[in-house]
Amino acid sequence: MPYTTADARQGMLDTVAGATERLGVALAALGEAYEQLDEQTGERLERELFGPVRLAYGRSQRLHAGFAERHALPTRQFPAAPAAAPSSGARALIESGSRDVADVETTLSELQDSLAPVEVGDAELRDGLRRLRELLAPLPQRAHELVRVLGR
Image 1 (tube, rainbow, N blue to C red):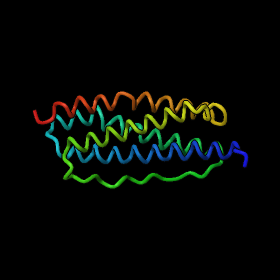
Image 2: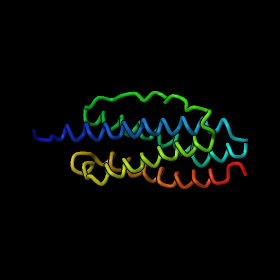
Image 3: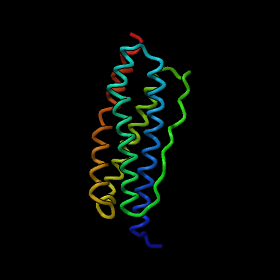
């Protein structure tokens, strides 16, 4: 069966949707970690991780909606992810959120490397993917640095 442009676009849309959902999970984990930290560390978490992930989550939702609308594909909503288990502890929650962010960045990288956004996508999608990756790329290292000093 031939692979059509419509199939490729739907596949890209599904990939962006999965990445968006994963960012929502990361956001929930980081939000729960924030609740467990002292004020100073919580502010650092907010500034260095939670804020950028929240920004990426919003951008990813808009990227999904815009691409779907431009190509007459179905749009969808992304409800907030369920709260992470607080018993995990702040360190584990930050590490979990960081893994989710790294996985999303890898997924977006693979999508870009597939050249599908060039062949059947559009300039706005390509630019949006690039911007998301730039925003997400430094976050796992920041999370590592934050976790390293927890409890000291």
